[in-house]
Amino acid sequence: MSTFPEVRTLPVPDGLEGERLDAALARMFGFSRTKAAELASGGKVRIDGAEAMKSDRVTAGAWLEVEMPAPPRPVEIVAEPVPGMTVVYEDDHVVVIDKPVGVAAHPSPGWTGTTVIGGLAAAGYRISTSGAAERQGIVHRLDVGTSGLMVVAKSERAYTLLKQQFRERTVDKTYHALVQGHPDPLSGTIDAPIGRHPVHDYKWAVTADGKPSVTHYDLIEAFRSASLLDIKLETGRTHQIRVHMSTVKHPCAGDLTYGADPTLAKRLKLTRQWLHAVRLGFEHPEDGRRVEFESGYPDDLQYALDTVRAESA
Image 1 (cartoon, one colour):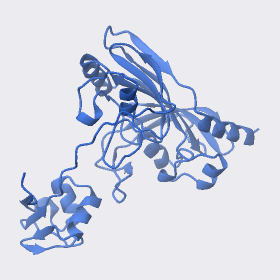
Image 2 (image 1 turned 120 degrees about the horizontal axis):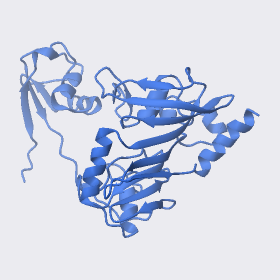
Image 3 (image 1 turned 90 degrees about the horizontal axis):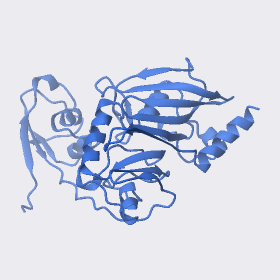
Image 4 (image 1 turned 90 degrees about the vertical axis):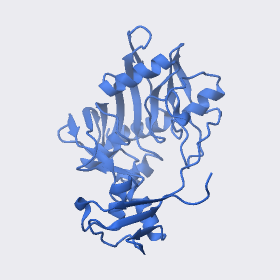
């Protein structure tokens, strides 16, 4: 394999006339804005042969030479037991698990903690080989900081049919969220596209060019400082509930990434967002029968809920 870096050369399209270099790189090469800025600041980009800076403005027709970043190394699946992860149901086609907080669905670059895939492997479960190597059998995900129900495909047929159900939005994905304040109206729908945050690469945001995202919510119980909501998703964007609730000024309690009050989080002893996948329903891939599963609140979320309820008594 060659040790020389790959250099790609492209002309600036007319539609990017006058854009900052980092923004143009992000659009032309699919980089995040952060990665584009790193390349431009590190002497990896030239405009018409001259070294450029991230704040330079580009001209339509100018030639960009970009020293491409090295491809990421393959991510290894480590079979490692996951304390607190329980199997709710399993057969020859699917395994439904109750995922604890602090566990990722699958390995990814930079993640050194436990994963659902690794936990199932350590417990001796055989899962589907469909999907990318590091996420075989995974048909949907929960954030590391979100607990609750997930289904993983064990057979190839299950993987194909479950993915189809998620695409067709026939899977019942129901969450409970404790959010700050009181949404107005108390029941409603948030229909707002979600894409990468324009500044912070680790976050997501409502953006004009984001993917369609629809969240339905209903009030379960109102407290003095917070509301417990029943939330159903039509779509499954990364951080969707967290982004949508933050956008309407009612972030999940404890979700400091998306604007939650740290004082409330401390009072409730929350170290993550109050968000739990309580119900999961789908058509079983073997015979088409409808199956549904439920999960109770973990101890940390129950403590926070009991606390706001007591404060409101």
